[in-house]
Image (cartoon, rainbow, N blue to C red; front, side, top):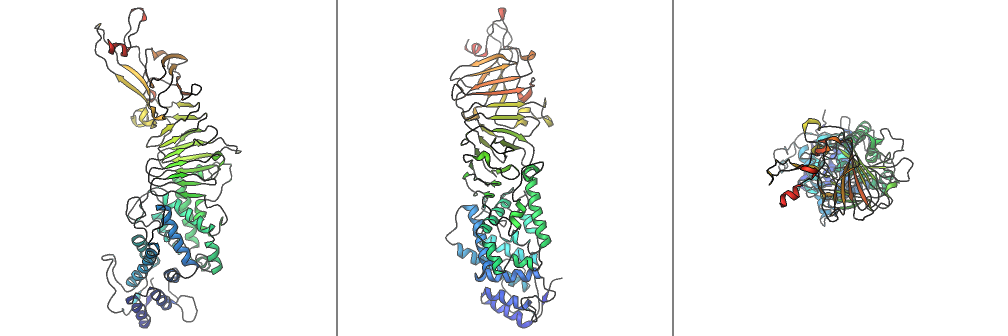
Length: 568
């Protein structure tokens, strides 16, 4: 039940301070009205201790006094800077205006003003005879609204005010209310309060928390006896902090798969994301690189050793791995690389040896790319690729495996094989894709294995002409013209492309009797570097590939190709 202030003198003091625009005095008078006169720094019986604690903390923030004030102001600045890459010149004005508006709207709500119908409604002309103190959730909405309207007005990918970076999304869990965190951060869904989809706000919260620990803000608040240690000393939020940390871990696992949170792994883990955000002293001296985000614009983003998870946000981002990246263990042997929205590329070309690219169905983003880095680590470390549209592999031997039983990224994937001698392996499982869609659509990778029908009318010899089916390897590998190419089935050479030709083959071979293995050899940029495409257990129609008999069979087994026919 909400506490009601009935002391007319104390209500008069709050009202006069609000009318004068003296916002520190509003907070001070509110604390005075709610403090037990017989017990200093203790609320009157019946007053919500969470609300009482919030008012005391808000007083320090508004007057810019104390360790907690520095904590809130600098945490808010970090959240803004992560998203935009800069701090605006009017930053101090923004943060002070937000704090002033929080005090103003708290006073209006205390005095019964309905801000839902008119956010700019004025204070009453006189103080009421009694005032109901808002509960902690109402206080949170007041606090968050000011932050979104004054501070984070231009810190979103859509231009809409953004509530998720508000410090209260995490700190109100210490005050007993986890709803701001679970509804505005730990969800893939967007809303008027959560602008960025996916895990961006979650990873940003972890990065900010780790940086604040690393900068000794937590130690400062510990020594000062202030929030958040003050909150836990009072016994507020122990259970809700646990629930919020659990929600962070659950959302992270749902988004990226159980493997990245230790499922089935023998490799030791590091700091999980729930502890990174909500444990005040866990890994205080750890690297701040564990969790990182990019800006909401186009980024050239370089991974750093120690990274557990990165989300580069909206924009078209290029994510580069440093030399030696194969030995980055991440968490439980996995590093999460999430490109967010936009067209995002991960570049492995700096590595000194090849990698394996595979796919699995873990995570909630329509298929995950898995990079096996083959490092010197005891177990072999992996990168999980999410919301990545292009991968540039190494200049050494890379292995790429596609299996049509495993979802590849929903938006397709461009693969640049680099200059090395690479093998691409197609493992066939379905004759047709689930749901009846074309196999090549289900494959979903921008390595196009298409069956192009080339119709020709009756020939000059008045003999019916069948359609000729080509196998076409889309040059999205960025190899330029293939210097030499060949195609064979069961080691029977079918076609050979000369130097400078493109990667299209016209086949004049009866493939009906050879349907086990299909191999396509593509010469790379160097004559010594050969790319091999192997399709094992291949049959007609798999991956959209269909080979038929020659276009025209003549006496003496002479063959007229479509090109010869077209030139006739």
